[in-house]
Length: 518
Ligand code: AMP
Ligand code: MG
Image (cartoon, rainbow, N blue to C red):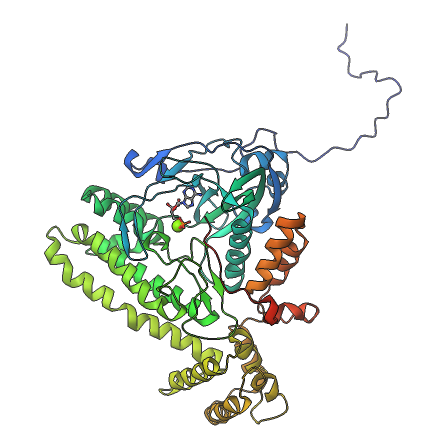
């Protein structure tokens, strides 16, 4: 019998459309490659996230998900929610809590570690960059001490908003990949809704990670960690005579740049402990952080920073202090004889002030609209800042509106001077500024564009962050969160339809203190 070549399919409609290939339901959510988990066991504790009652995805960061090669729609769906809440460990993840130590408010704590965070693993993104994917608020670990391992919705939203705002400003930072609510209450002073943040970072290795091993006289641990950090963040240091010294130098450089960027947008971290200082040079561990409204160098928001150790003005010197802690920890691996390492390491640490000032003054010059740099420019900038402080002028608006002013005084000047309690204080400064502008060849339009590119119109103002948190916590309303995220995605654009987000708080909206993430 000849083989049948046709199949009788009866009366069915044969005009079918083929569907594009769907990813297999069990395809891994992330392509993990976990280099930290390959380090010796004393670097971390293997621990799985504790499941939660009712995971609900609040937001997924689509573009960041795609950068990581993950499908944002799947992350936002039931499968993703289970993973982002810690209810299911995704394929090829090797969940660990990292060990670290730290100086908290100057006091040595030999063991801190991830008490409420779990690193799922590392992903090499579409840009070739390796990044950590970490759950924060995912349950207890061997490092939890008396903590519950959980995070509240308020701090999770704050970190989401502020870290993504920093990223949009172009400032090195950890990122927020997702936020989920847990359907459970956590107990602080009052019961609060629980949440988990999925955080992405170049790595979560801190100055305090080096100090963990140094504090135990575990020189081999310091050496292995330095090798890991060099391979991961500073590969060029591997070829240096003294790789650990070259790494220290590179970390100092990145921190100098980072702190300059903070100062230039009025960002106050709030808890610059060595365990909150990333060796990759990213802003990390957003707790009681805030952007300044009116400028004052002594500004402190953190409710736990009684002495003002981490006030705005102190951030550069605290960074230097933290870096000297890193240098100390590295001494035995910089040279076989630690004594011989002291001098070169000290020299590297001493380069911080100059590197910071150079980055800061270059940035300040751009904020003043100066294309060339002259000797007295920094002084001109400092005079403006002094007048802003005396007159409670809004930091962000002063610099943003300065970009609107032309070569000659006009009515437009009032847009800036009205930010000062004594408008004449600004006018006097402005005439000096215009004198300086006369020696520049750039025209108004070009200057304005350049100034706008460094002085944002939109920052995550504290009262707006608070508004987002209150709406979410009291009404389950995430509308204000979504709107704020949209505004902050383009901080340097004008967005006239969102002008109200530029405004400083009205007196009744002022937030005087921010609280730690715990
Ligand atoms: P942070 O203030 O977030 O930088 O945390 C400082 C240290 O306290 C870290 O070791 C955290 O893991 C730990 N920690 C903070 N909150 C909690 C918590 N709710 N449960 C367990 N550990 C925590
Ligand atoms: Mg921390």
